[in-house]
Length: 625
Image (tube, rainbow, N blue to C red):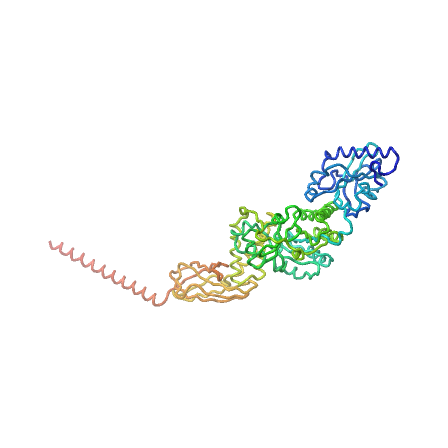
């Protein structure tokens, strides 16, 4: 039973007590400390199970836990006026309910409501005394208070919001499109098993699989291919590892949005492009349109001018593409919907969204949610399943939401915020991109091992990862690049002996890369000349080949030479040092050298004899005098 002044016949003392209590509540309500996050502002009162939504006239039943004293305590509901907007609902957590209480239920002894810390408080019809009848639709703040039965002092309280809507809302429900962005911090078979199971659930949502620092692209691609098709769920396209639009013009091509979408397409297929939470830059948007992308999902703040009063509930059609906006508020509610209080916030926000234009057909709302582990995906999946049973909500996929009747934008474009400076370490990313571009050029494309390197590179520059995730991806990228570079080189002995000045230098090269590569091998040494050129084109497919290069040796002894392996684009894939041991020259060279030495010796002897003869003659002339 409910208690308000003059509505229900009861003993005079009880009626007077109820009037006094409501008056006290009315006076104290604005100054009451606001509850935190629509849950309990006292640690001993917690919601144990979601309440969901009510039909007008239906009872309210709340399961809660209480860790304080039971004897001599009582519990009751305080109902406040319905909320008028989604912004007011969002501010409820910090400001608390505004205005005077609307209704107060009879206090009930706590000992009769349960035991061992678990209790259930019921009220037959919390809004009966308001006289609203069938016009009661709305989202109502409701406080559950535990108080001392003798003094009336509040010992604990919990604030929740309860949607009240008639069953007729099922005729034109709000269509809700949820995009689940699956972003594991590391490789997770448990998460993929959960996703595989969810594909059998009879309600609709869209999802994407994104890169993770501990997951190679090859592994993610293999598992995504193993996921069965579902008549309910559809994959949509989002960047494999999103980055700042302000960085686009500074990044190497492998980190551009087009490359990130191409990599994601191998895992997720085609569909609308989800650009949330980071808005695209004007150049990125132009690039998407040029690639033929005509359906975008962006933060709703970019489309706010097309629905300045109410929440955006239709896609917007521009000249060359359509855009639908995801609600940041709904996204935050989804993120917290794993708890009873969190789910109650979510259903209240969805109900308030519906009540902005109740019964209007074709309205859609979009939200995105990131999940990173099986447990998180499990409670999100359970929350969506529960939400799908609500009469005023119909879960649809993102493509279905974009197919709704759009708002036509004739001359305006998507509002894009001004670009800020790029916060990424660009020099490091460019340095890592070079070897990958070289391997791609050598392979003539992107075989899966190279795609994995591209994936690590994109994660290393992704804003979706924290510093730890980017560092982990960088380490894996360094290891993969080092291994690939070490897979191409000179095999066998790296010391080559030459016994003549002119010779053909045999070099045996090997590639253990698991894909075919076309390379240019070149030899460089200041003590060799190359009559027929120092470069040769080779093609290796996990094989070896011997290449001969004619050389002319300029010096005797041992000296190093460097072998370079370059891609068709000219980038160095690998380098190897070899040792040349030159022990002799040609016969002609030796003959000429000996002849030169003989001429020099003969000239020296002749000169020596002439000098001695001249000295003897001089000595004889001196004796005669």
